[in-house]
Image 1 (cartoon, rainbow, N blue to C red):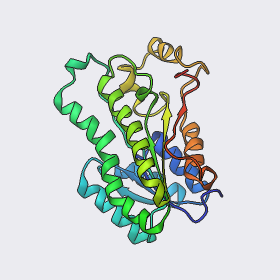
Image 2 (spheres, rainbow, N blue to C red):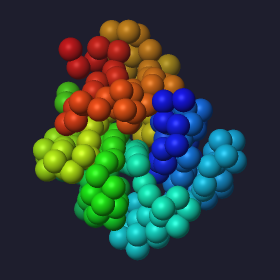
Image 3 (cartoon, rainbow, N blue to C red):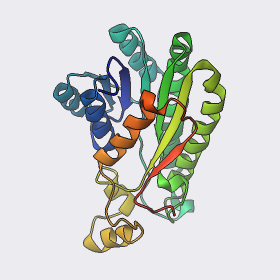
Image 4 (spheres, rainbow, N blue to C red):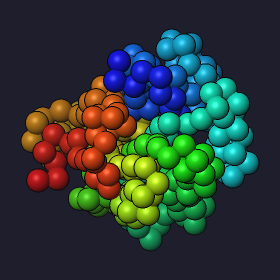
Length: 246
């Protein structure tokens, strides 16, 4: 019960890493708001864990504001925010990614962090405490070819994490990131372009431990970074990657 009596918003919580984090947080005692663009997916996870489902597009100010207002109305405070929602463009030469694809990747992967911070940080400052976790990627540390603008968006997220940590530390707010390697999530096929045994083998050959990450792997790291056990940890971008970035 490492998150007993804590409240947590998890974006992109309807599937993949987000669902794994939401389930683990609830199992450790947290009240969880499962946020997703897919309302049915959010509701399914929320029902499993006794949480709250919230439909939101984290790239829009109105949606993020409504999400935060719903959390404050339900709990009176927000202790933890996990910025997990993310998308990618398909593997392709960097100059062939359309402007619309570029804008969407940065809106969901980068702008969302700004929007959630704008809404939630004032409440955390009032409380004198809070934990923000940004789900970045090994792509922001060791980029893969043909995922250029996705790589860049995750690098932005890592830098934003460190900048936020420095600024918010005096207010009792910790900000960390976790860098997963590719995992069995809905985004995996998008990263690979197509899901074939040959392409899977190529991806796995870059991971020394020899397997993809799982939602449970990322949930374990998220739990630590958002718990009081990590009270002295801020500005960290923890690689959960089976050795890929070594």
